Length: 126
Image (tube, rainbow, N blue to C red; front, side, top):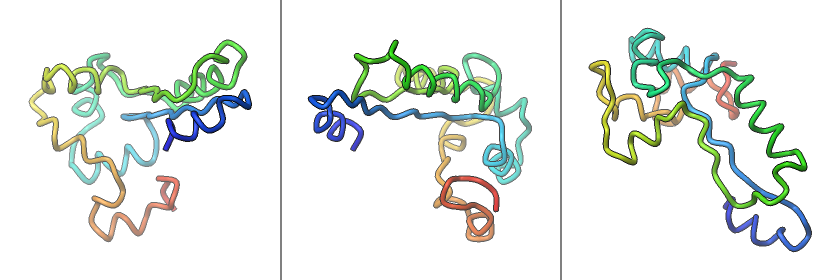
């Protein structure tokens, strides 16, 4: 959808990109860690950068994409995940004794019904 919309709007000077954040501190990550019964340290251990991201890091990336400095960037996906997706691409696996597939389940639809009921359409706790 991002790429097709970017192609449709490019001639009009409209840039369309997707920001793909993962392992960001907040209510959704807290819910995920509670559900998986893991600590923040365990969650951070699977990150090449060694920590969870902050919402302000997502905000800075979005501000950049909205600036004139990004006027030639369109139809791309910006992964803001501390290198997590890069290690999956290279098949590095997750350090820290946590199986990578367990932490890749991020969609609220994959949570049990009692947890899904607590999440709104924007991935936030109700």
